[in-house]
Image (cartoon, rainbow, N blue to C red; front, side, top):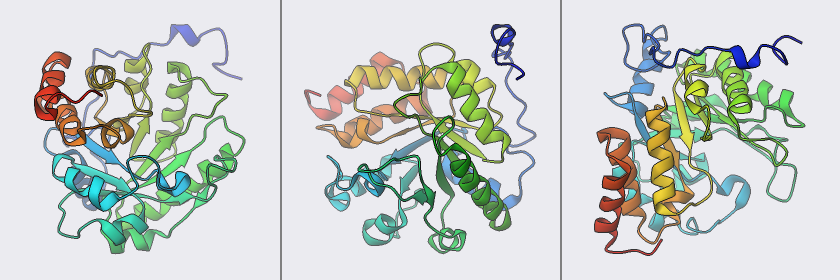
Length: 294
């Protein structure tokens, strides 16, 4: 098959030449309808960047550490985030309707951590996203996984529904235990998601070639935070991702599992929106956390 061997290393992503935005400030969105643009603007803001706070983990993990009480642990952090990524059950039960955050609604699910996670289906109807006033809906895509085709069908169904109602789709690259988080795989997964219609993509950071992943993806790439890291490592990852072409970060455990989550989300925000250095962001965290050990 084409591109599986021979010419892979000869690719040229022209990372030094930004993609034209088509008169709109969000990557790849210039030709979208007004409603799509309006919702994406709620996520990204005037600078085209976003700090997304993910706390949808309970849809397959249950009450994971830090999310035992979303009302107590997450709601106080909302003022520091641009967007909240959660399930409809959590949004309706504990997220105050007075919050002005953009809502990114988890739309896929099915298996728990006790089962094969890649066998997901759509877990809600697009009309419910309209009722909730979601700025986007999110679906897991398991490129290379056992249920790859099903997960892609979930996404394309959601894309069609989203186009009908003006709601963008966030395609989330899911990395299984047998898949390597390198630029070749992540570039493949993010490009497939964008090619099949998702208006934004969430994926992991890789130390080599992440700029190629972003350049080769014609829609905004949001970096997934993943498991909890030491403070400086998490801030470094966010800084590098933004420097290499990401449009924002979506962190969960690296924020809500801290001793001082309010300090961490503000430090991340300073990188994403103010272009702070790693050192300045770490200093902000230490100052706001009053010396938290983690």
